[in-house]
Image (cartoon, rainbow, N blue to C red; front, side):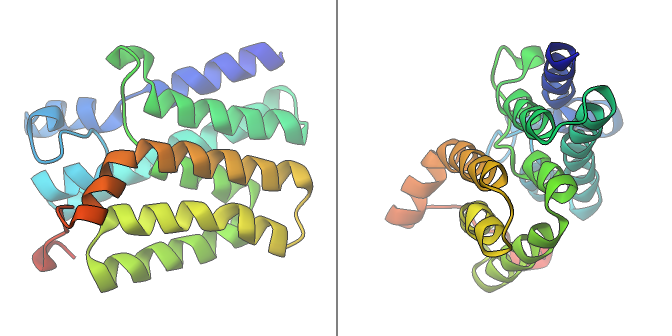
Amino acid sequence: MTVIALLASYLLGSIPNGLWLCRALWHVDLREHGSHNIGATNAWRTLGKGPGFLVFFLDMLKGALAVLLGQWLVGTPLVLILCGIFAILGHSLSLFLRFRGGKGVATGLGVILMLMPGVTCIVFLVWLLIVLATRYVSLGSIVAAALVPVLAFFFDYSGLYVAFGALAAALIIVRHRSNICRLLDGTENRISAGHL
C-alpha cells in the first residue's frame, strides 16, 4: 500500500492546475505569458487575483490531499511525509508536462498544513509580510521555505518532521535558483502594487 500511496501522491501532484484551468476557463496558456510558470503567481500576474487565488488553492489542495491519502492508505508518519514529498515532486516534475512544472510553494504549503499546522500559520504570515513589504513573491517563498525546518525544530517536532522540512525547503529553494540570481542582480519581477 505504501507504493500505491506514493505513486498516487506523485500523480496527484503532477496535475497542472494552473495550465489546465487557465486554458479551460480563460483560454490562456500561462507558459506563454509573464514568467512562463504554471503556478499561482504567474496566474495572478497574467489574469488577476481571482484566477491566482484559485490556482493557489487547487495547488495547495494537492499537497493536503496527498497527506490525507497517505493517512488513509497506511497511516504512519513516515508515509505521510513521503506522500507530501512525492506530491511536491509531482508538481515540480509533472508527468503531464514531460517532467517540468511549477516551483512547489503552494503544494508544499498544503503538505505542511496537514503535517504541522502551527508552523504553517507562521510561515504564511512571514511570506505575506515579505511580499507586502518588498513585492517579491520569490523572496517571500524562499525565506518561508527556509523557516520550515527551523520552526519544526523550535516547536519540538520529531527529527523526522525537521528532516522533512529541510528536504522540502531544499526542493523549493533549488526550484527558485533563477529567481535567486535575479534577486541578486536586481532584475527580479515584482508584483505590481495594483495586484496586491
